[in-house]
Length: 85
Image (cartoon, rainbow, N blue to C red; front, side):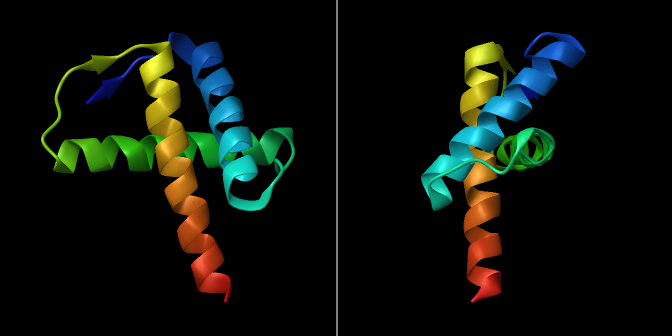
């Protein structure tokens, strides 16, 4: 799966939104702008790996990239929360 939200600014916006949404889903709030971007970009990588493992091919635009990144970021935070316990 190739994520293509539309350049560097698109990746930063996707990362920010995905990290923020994942923060809300997993703990009720975001983590701050920079941390949200980092979590979201790592989440996009994780989401892409998951879809690749499931043999899903194609190109994802902005909305699809946001959904994939958010899924990956939520999984990242869920695993981090489990590891903390």
